[in-house]
Image (cartoon, rainbow, N blue to C red):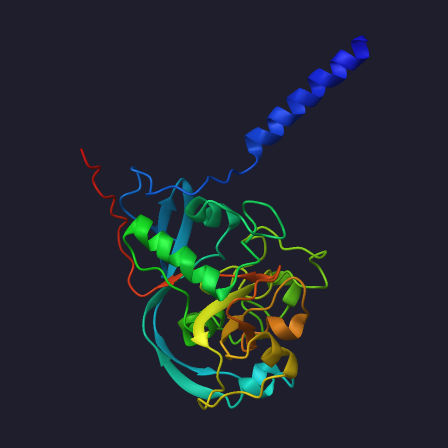
Length: 295
């Protein structure tokens, strides 16, 4: 009997320890925390500006990407792997913008929306099983809470940031030519996503732009010349209206080819798989404004 009591006490103590150290996910609230009226400027990569925000007790960081001109698409370091929709490589110019240091976590998504749809369940893992439509619903609520204008990245912004912007070293993947240094993918992920920022970042200090989960972009899926791509019968059956949008970055369930910085993936705007996630972007960073309570 004494042994049973001792085991019960020990189990209770262990449970308390687990609860104490486990990151929490708050339910959906109606406004940002009172103490978080301003974004805090911080230093990450030398010369790269960042700002930290807290919404409903969940903190996340945005990284400023200085605009510039770069070659988008099937550039030489991509080898012989590029698909037809990555061609031709072409020069584009991007203005300044801000992008999430990490993918949107389950903790942040749940704090804003009040629910967590993810297949892999852990607060610091990226939210998954979200459609392009879900992303925009989340953004609408987030912007109501903060008074800011978060959005999905444009595809040209996403690739520029993944390549490292003006700090680019010309890597095949986001931050390295060694895929295992920067990405969770089918060969190392053990059939699940992993906590954000648990691999090496790229030149701008951005994590998981190769692997972990695919990231929805704002753009509708078109070829680089603006023409409509040749859809497979499977895709057409899933969406007769051809409402396909761009996803980037590869994921835990796919191989290295899809984790390349130029790889383009298309998804029905309502589909939500266990590897579909998102990353925040914004044109201009600002302060979270807390509306005064009505008396």
